[in-house]
Length: 142
Length: 205
Image (cartoon, rainbow over all chains, first blue to last red; front, side):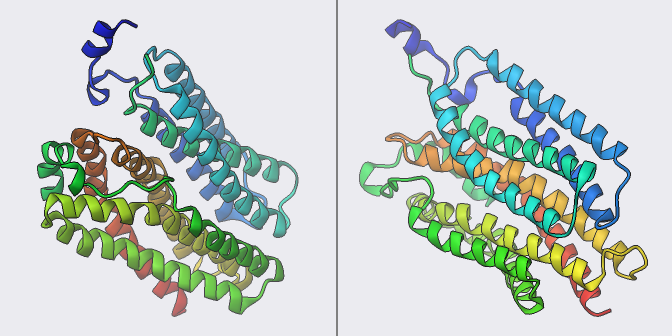
């Protein structure tokens, strides 16, 4: 990028940005609803069809968010990566705590697998929405 | 808080270097992390041992602080902050928000993990329990708060901290991000009051 292009680059808050964060927040909301469904039946075995559908929708929205993000040409990927890694570490700890609570109370088999899959999406969602929100307001390197 | 957002953009960006708070070397106060680790290890121990006292301590202390801080910051600190001078607001936020970034997630983890265990031990999750419906209501309330906190407020908090650290912070970006706290304060406040109603109802049965 030339110096002229750099000076005419719009301010971060004025750049058109795809709806990555809304996609990921809806994904997070769906996986939380799924988690509430599972927890509300615990320690009985819950019907798994509704939370599985929620998980699939949630995962699809997360993937959609990443696809939209990958198409952004002018983006501070280094900042995104830095924030994403640390946020993921923090929320893996949180997810691990929730997983521990389920395992400790005797969750096994398909319900436990579904809870684990939901927690993976949960941690990825939170890390991604934090990293996107931070990086979108950073000036990308020329 | 609305005054803060309305006035902030041009003035924060135009702060003189001497008026600006010194940015911290790290976004998150690293010195607080060992305390967080101790709290979380204690939480795991409380769940693993099933100690009713330890679980209740974590749940009541964590929940009380979570609700109290949320309401106090939203409805007491926020409006006061909005009436401070711009440099005072910037300095307060630069010192306050990093702490909130580690305190609130820790309190939430304490409250929810121990609360789930308490509910199992007391049998409140059993469908035959008179508290079952109230517990489901509390799950929904927590779900709404978690979505707002993790999906909207926490990202804004971290993004503001990144912006404040820049040599020339962009006031418009900070104002745009801070607006999220104002838009959600009412919802968060209502959910916290609902939590108080539900939990006192459950506790009195």
